[in-house]
Length: 305
Image 1 (tube, rainbow, N blue to C red):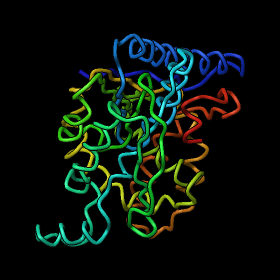
Image 2 (tube, rainbow, N blue to C red):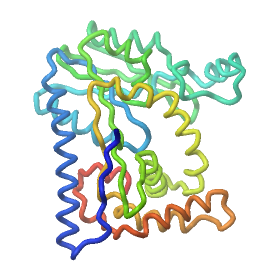
Image 3 (cartoon, rainbow, N blue to C red):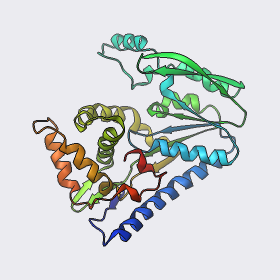
C-alpha cells in the first residue's frame, strides 16, 4: 500500500516554513544515509546498479554513494550503461527486423550485452579497463576511455537499463547490490492527491524548462512514451532491487508552484495539453509558494529547481 504524505496549505511566517523544509530535508537525508551506510557494510561489494524512472534523484543518490565509499578510502567509478548502446545503424536494422519504425533506445536489445559482459568480467581480472563512449549526436560509439582498476574499487552502473534482468544477471555474478530510487509516496493537498507519477511529471516540466530549455508543451508531448517505457521496462522489476529509496518530499508542490505557473502559463491557449495544464494550475494554487533559497546546496531538489 502506498504512503500518502499530507502537505501543509500554508505557514505562520517564514520561520515555520524554513523549519518545515529543513525537517523534510533531514528526513530524506536519514533515509538515504541509512541506505548508503547499509550498502557500505556489504562485504566484498564491487558492483552497484543504480536505477529509477525519470526525475527520481539518481544523481544525488549516486553522489552520496560515491562519498560514502571515498570516506572508506575506496575509489569509485560511475559507468553509464548508455555507453554500451549498439550504433544507430545496427539499432535501426534491429527495429526493422522486428517490423518497427524508428530506433528503439529502450529495450534490452539496444544494449551490446556481450561487450558489457566482457567489461564486467574484466573488473575482476584486469588492472586496466576500456569503457566505450557513445555519442548521441552521431548515434555511434566514438571512442573508449581508459579506467585504472584496483581490486578494491567500486563500480556504479547507472541508467534505466541497470534494472533489466538480462543486465542484472551480468552485474550480479560477483559482489553486487541493486539500488532503486523514485518517489514512492503520494502527496495530499487539500482534497486532491498527487500520485508519484504525477509528481515526477511536475518535476520534469520544471527541470526541462530550467536546465534543458525545453517547453512544457514538449514535455507533455513525450510524457506518454516516457511512461510507456517505465511501465514496460522499469516498474516490473523495481521491487526486486535490494534497496528502495523513496524520494518524495512533502514540500515539493509549494517549491514547484512558481516554476510551474511560469512554464504552464507560456503554453498556447489552443495547445492540445492546455486542459491538463489548467488542471495542474488549479491543483497547485492551494500550496503556499516556497522559495528555493530554503534548500541546501546539496539538496536532491536542486536537480529540478
